[in-house]
Length: 253
Image (cartoon, rainbow, N blue to C red; front, top):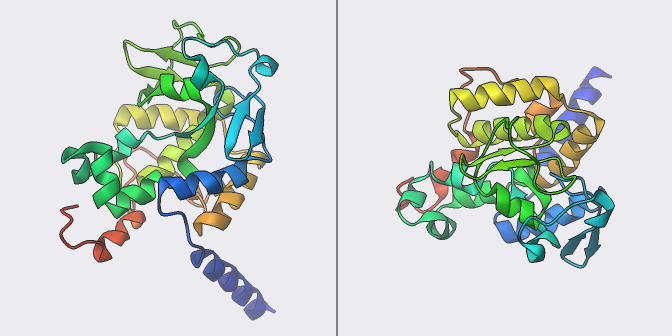
């Protein structure tokens, strides 16, 4: 009986490893829509989304969202990199030699990071633009600027505060990205994210979403399932960098 259970577990693990994860951002956005469409709410503002083909339309009135500046972007859903491409990209040599466009052209690891489904969330376009590549922070003195959407942006300090119910989700995404791709997080970042991780532990919805994404990526986020736990001084494994060994030997990364 035990041997059968072991075999079944092995088969499940092997089948996940054979899944072909998206290899570019365009592929990832198509797959991400199939994953998130049943949930039908935007990430930062929790506004209902209506999907029309590949387009997502947020119901701004339903969540009392107020346009801050850009009505066109406020009325569409965009795919937000929770850990910004600037954060994971500038740690690659390709970024130093030509920015994001050069990384997309020359660096397969960067393309995998850009297409990683765990790091993509449907967000109101204006909020996505306002967040830009700002770091997450606590902004107690900053007022909300998007109606009832519970986010705060300090444009001078280049900081962004998300709502309490998603702070732990954000922390576990950062832990995952740093661990998989060998990325550096400052001590201050780690302290904030660890606090959010403790204050907002993974709930049933996040664990369910983790499994859905795992069925596409071929692996789970172990910081959601609890298999791995981040701590100050954690040494990222960098298992997502293995593609370097068989990609373009002329690449300096």
